[in-house]
Length: 78
Image 1 (cartoon, rainbow, N blue to C red):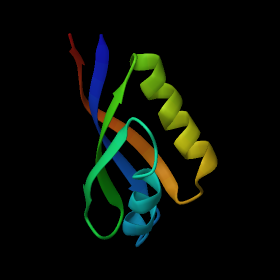
Image 2 (tube, rainbow, N blue to C red; image 1 turned 90 degrees about the horizontal axis):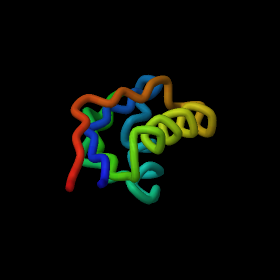
Image 3 (cartoon, rainbow, N blue to C red; image 1 turned 90 degrees about the vertical axis):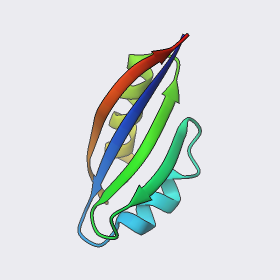
Image 4 (spheres, helix red, strand yellow; image 1 turned 180 degrees about the vertical axis):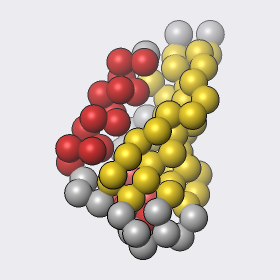
């Protein structure tokens, strides 16, 4: 089974577009848009909930512009 989750990524003010470009290069994460200021909408596809949690932790650790990673809807395919 595959986990599919909607994710909102929050950035420092004014940095959503720049962070969205960086996130678009990550495997398993599809950026759907941003509000032009602080919030990015994305879809995560991965093996399980642990992979989603690990991605959130990694994003917060690796990118100073990211201040929060919030899964919204989480489901399974299969």
